[in-house]
Image 1: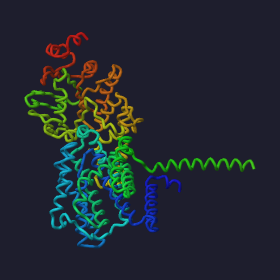
Image 2: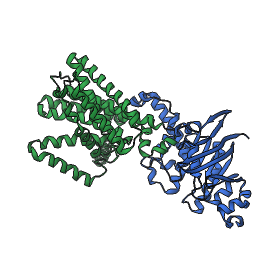
Image 3: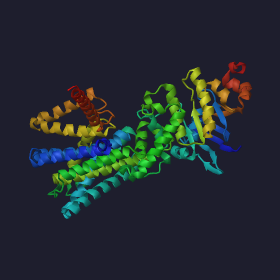
Image 4: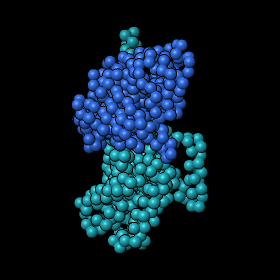
Length: 333
Length: 262
């Protein structure tokens, strides 16, 4: 029994199952009410966005400001499909099509722009996102600036959880593979990576496409959960917001992105009541955190579940000491 | 003995400046050759041309491997690496924020046989290959006495060990030809002596042909069998260390009188 708990995979599974069940309980007992459920959905969507942008910017070192563009492709695709096909199958089709389409656009855009570096790439991706937004404003099928309404809601906590955990696991698995290491090598030193036999263009585009794919999923979830879309949701500020989460959590830290996504969403929920002061407080908080933790909350470190292992270890050694003491007492008696 | 690398009339101009002009170099299989010359002579540019960082303005670079001739000019660096040419850099270019182990594992990436799907899902092929990769990397690190520091960040290693790690990383790409750009730069005489020994040893062990750029004459004269001397982008001499020591043009251009007396 002890041995089973020691394996990383099982520990991970138990942790995830607990998270899911606890929050599910809180929802069914209405402690997490409809309003807080919106926060929960926003957290999950932001986690997917931040982790996928972290793959591009934090791990592969490609400064992208176009994540809202990919998100909007996923959102509109899913919305258009589910509006015509309001079934669970339609929803899955929508998520999948949205993600694939976003990845496809990511590929087409990434191939030429990823030759650019640093600021130039940021400007190019920013331009790409703006073009996508303008296209959505002018298309008939997206209903222009007025946007789409009454998108059927298929997303609940279960699906949010599955998609969030799924994308985070896929990305962190990828980063632990040789292909993922190739991406990280590009961030570290592109010239050296190239000289060590890594096709840098291929891996930059790969990271970009995976990131776009996940942003597409996030967009699809957004469309289905909030049942209302307009192009202005996906403006420059949305991309910056995602980038803020990534930088705040720490470039190159998956767990950092997750923490920052949760933290920022909770902060902005609590600040909601302050109306005008809200953005001032929010900005102030960001400035303070950046002054004291310029490398982000987590730097490039990861929190793993071995934290629990340590705690468990302490607990176990404590218990065995207690047992020994009891035994020696018994002997005396 | 057979020719492994044949460089013919290699020329590189940057605008009006000809950095490398009509350079001919021939390396025999298993040779250890030095490339020396005053600062700005074009040594590193030659390395950059050989490894695909620069595209030559004219000339050919041919690598012969098991009777296959591969033209290296115009290939991208990662493709040059795949043909079996590895290098180190003058100013160390390690992946600083990664562990020693990861530095080596990244260089072995081209041999990895699992695809993207397996890396997403950590399928059995992933586990098998990663295990093999890690074992091979640690094997390689043992040679450089770095295996006990495999989990250390590369940036935290002392300078000399960083140089060693860079050589280990180059070897991890499984090369037939190794290019070392000033491997002894910044080392003290004792470290240089040890490095000299190490270079000779890895040549035997890995069956390598080595060409190195170096300013430390104690190293060059001791282990290089042949030396090319570059000045203003041209080869001004080519011969054994003894021939180079007494070559008038070389002394005039660069070495001065000290070396002929040494």
